[in-house]
Length: 600
Image (cartoon, rainbow, N blue to C red; front, side, top):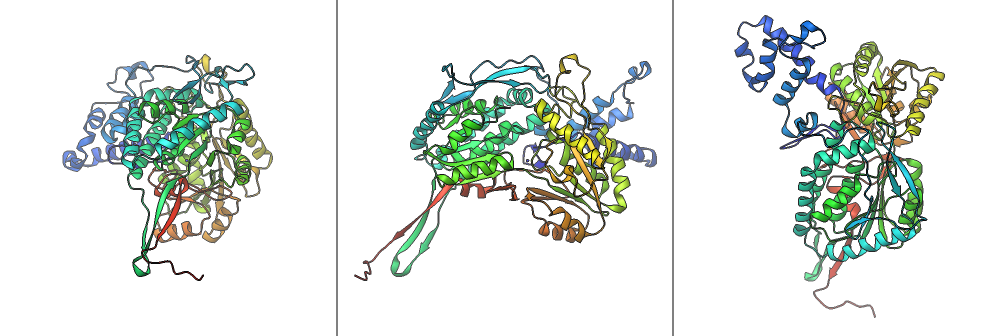
């Protein structure tokens, strides 16, 4: 749902891949060295690139990848040069995501979570009932037990909803500026605790620390954005005949329920809570039982920022807990991110109470690469569309349609770059692909690769279990990213959402053909087009049946614009100004300035 979006002071990479290094590094070095040998006045040629001076000096004085004894005597390594380039080119926010110079407070295999993960009435709650279900939560990087999850039953769910109801009666009466102050303070606290939150996210989810930092940034930016929206909530004035008039009021719904997914735990918690509380609602949030660790940190932060007790509550549990929340009579709205089958069940449960829902569900999105596209850019886009968060992204463009004339070149480059993706300990700075979220999910994804081979697809690289060299990671849930060629529309790998690092490449000849094939899906979350023909780009996007579309890029999710899907990929939107409509209700007031004109 990540994501290169430049803001005034930071770059937000919600979803991120290894190839951003290659884009900045290898192409730049090649260009610079060519210029160095063909231009007599290099200083004049590079006048506009003064920010790159640290990296240029390293090139001039010698650099290499220090693999041999002789290389060790050279002055600079490739990694050092990468860091110099990043320091020169990147904004402070993105530079911090790539390279952390502080002290690591945890490492894979060392963190143990012992504090309660449920939160209501302003504090963490330890469920003392011996009958409460306790389930193990695993660390994906190592396979070890990270903590125990106390699942909430009817009593606990009711306590959390009552806590949220009490907070709602206070919070709804505050002015937008008062709500905004609390939200901005929460955003400040998130920024202050950025590394701590990101590390726990990594340990609980398995994604790289680079991506986790950017997820935390997205959470902060979302809260900041909706703090601004809280100050401008307004209705409409309508003049009627005879001096009478009408106006509308935008009012909160009440207690909202958020149900999160395991691929973006902290980000989803913020994406659901920020618009809800901006509109004057309170929330009870249930994270995925697979990744329960960071939602409670957000609850603590809201409390520390000055929110009333119960404004944002966290209940842990699985399907039973979710069902209790959906059926609770005091819940006014449900927002869910997850699979299509579960989304249908939630919609059915909500319908019994006539409760509005926001559903952000699955996708099997197409990326269309035309022969006139910038191939280098298209390859980078395809990698970003498939391998962020180990491929566990609902909006990923896993059906990559490539025009026939450029298929060989595309496959050669995408396979080369896929093989170069560094897999390993997600808490190491250089890692670009961590562990999948659980052992059953890893086995499921590997099963899809096996099925693809049986159905005639060719595995060009990857698709196998991976064991890192570090002994403590030997039981982690790793696999090599996979590129499948020779795919056809009727293959299982093309029709079903795999939710793992598996790219299916399909060839096409004409625009009409690829549009028909791209739209041949019950899902419609996202789509992307790569071409230099701007008319064709807009024409194709107009005819794609998807809610979030990209031209010459992919997986960009700035919080200022709506995100959501068509067809079975969901209902409603998250982020952007329109989201206010999904967390509020409209009241119409008619004011008569004369006498009642009665028929009786």
